[in-house]
Structure formats: C-alpha cells, structure tokens
Image (cartoon, rainbow, N blue to C red; front, side, top):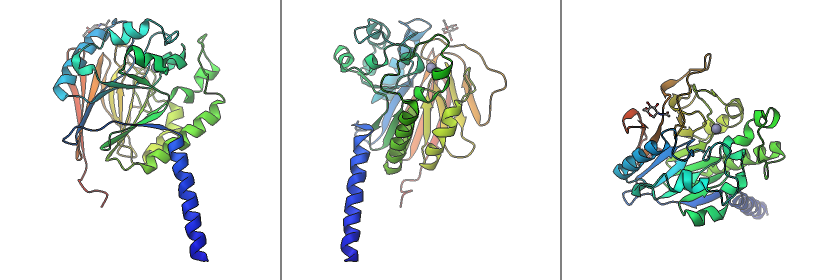
Amino acid sequence: MAAISMLFLFTFSSALWVLHASAELQTFAHPSKHDGSLSFLVLGDWGRRGAYNQSQVAFQMGKVGEKLDIDFVVSAGDNFYDNGLVDDHDAAFEESFTNIYTAKSLQKQWYSVLGNHDYRGNAVAQLSPLLRKIDTRWLCLRSFIVNTELAEIFFVDTTPFVREYFTETNGHKYDWRGILPQKSYITNLLKDLELALRESSAKWKIVVGHHAIRSVGHHGDTQELVTQLLPILRENNVDFYMNGHDHCLEHISDTESPIGFLTSGAGSKAWRGYTQGLNRKGLNFFYDGQGFMSVQLTQTDANIEFYDVSGNVLHRLTASKQLHSSL
Ligand SMILES: *[C@@H]1O[C@H](CO)[C@@H](O)[C@H](O)[C@H]1NC(C)=O
Ligand SMILES: [Zn+2]
C-alpha cells in the first residue's frame, strides 16, 4: 500500500515537473564540433549602420571567426540603435546586420537577446520569424536556452528587471507588450531559469543577458540583477555571466563564487569613460574602446579572449575543470 502510493506520487510529481520544465524556456539544440569542442564569438551594442567602427569590429570578427572555426555568434543586445526596429520590414535590419557581418565565418546562427534600446522601438518585431526569412542567421527571443551538450547557454531578458525603465523613462517609450505586469514576468522568468539551471548536466553553464551584473563601465552594477539574478547563478554553479550594455570590454571575478563576469558591449560606439565611485571589487580587465570576445570550450578547459578593433588580443582568461568532477 505504502509502496504503491509512493510510486504514484513519484510518477505524478515527475510528470508535472517534466511538463513544467519543457513548457517554459524554449531550448535549441546546437551540436558541438566533431571533436567535442565548441567556439563562438560574443558581441553587444552594435547596430549603427557600420558607424563608430562597427564595420571594423565586424571585419576582425570575420578573421577571428575563421581562425577559431566558430559554431555561432552570441549577441548580448542593443542590436539596433537608437530605438530598436520600427517594424519587421525596417531597413535597419539589413543595414546594421546583414550588410555589415558579411565575412564567410560569420554566416552562422546568431543567438540574440534584446537590450534596453531594442525595447525603445518595436521589441516584438525583432522576435518576428519574418526577420529569419530576410536573414536566416537571425534568432532573437526574450529568454531561451541553447544546448550544445558540452555547454548550456541560458539567455535571459534583463531589460524588464530594471526599475528605472518603468519609473523614470526620460521621455523614452518602452515596448512592454508581453511583459506586464512586470513583477510576475520576472518571478516566472527566474523560476524557469532556476529550474533549467538546476536540471542542466552540461559541463559549462553560461548565462547571457544584456545588462551587467557587475561592471565598472559607465552604468556600473545592475542592482536588480545583483539582488535577484546573481544568487540563482551562484547556487547553480554557473561558470560565466556574459553581457553588453556598457560599451566596453571587461572581466570581473565574483568575490563569493567562481563566476566570471564578462562584458562585451563594444560592437560600435565606445570610449564613454569611467564613472567615479563604482564598485571595483574583483576587477581583472577593463577596456573602454571597441571590440569583441571569443569563447573556446572543451570538456576540461575554457579559453576566453578579448579583441580590440584591430584584432589585437587585449586580455585572455582560462578556466579548467577535472574530467570526471561529477563522479
Ligand atoms: C575607431 O577605433 C580607433 C582605434 O581604437 C579609435 O582611435 C577611434 O577613435 C575609433 N573611432 C570611433 C568613432 O570611436
Ligand atoms: Zn543597453
């Protein structure tokens, strides 16, 4: 009797759980290379029709992309300046994306999140399947997962976390369709993310959002993410948090966990300067100019490099794992 009801309970709860896990964050499978490794580029804050060195950064991405034989590109948001896209026929899509990232090595899948500037336009347009018909590389969703088996990459829609965009909009209009009420949107998102992170068996867990958790650039730390997102990343052994928003390149170490905070928000306009009085704990590297980042992963090692507009490697970080750490 006891055994039967236990079995029932177990079956019942695991069925519920599977349903919940698969119902929420959409997951895309993207296989690693045949040798089991993976490489990709990370770029943020870019769409300016080639201006502010966007084209020069794109050119260097093409060269590095070829050298590393990249599997895909990650865009950390603020994809189209100043105010996102007008609609899914906006010429800015081709002028700032298709016609700029023309190198052969960049003709791969791009996985993108939205930034605050994207929300100032028609945010829904960037999610439109119509854009994928214009350029098949494009995939932008609010929050989703890319599973390469070696690594699982969790893309998080961070703009709705930031209170200021709801309270002091400075004359900007934000496209909050699908987001309101804000509180339950965030609660649900964090619940889904936590569940997916907990269940992940990937060797490397990477979270991507537009806003920095930690930054010494113009905007500094994003308090809402420090309070609400960071604890979940710490509890679930996330290796790296990658973001844009500040128009610079940065590597900051978490002081309470092995998480590395990596900013790659230097896809076009940069040189914004330091803000005085920011939290500089754990700072390893800060570059105020244009550039991008590459990520190379194997079962045991991560190798991450930051490049400037001329393709020089400005900073490199490596991390290692034991082969059978889960045994
Ligand atoms: C383009 O990059 C060069 C080299 O870093 C820099 O000197 C120049 O100011 C940049 N241009 C803009 C508009 O940021
Ligand atoms: Zn931004």
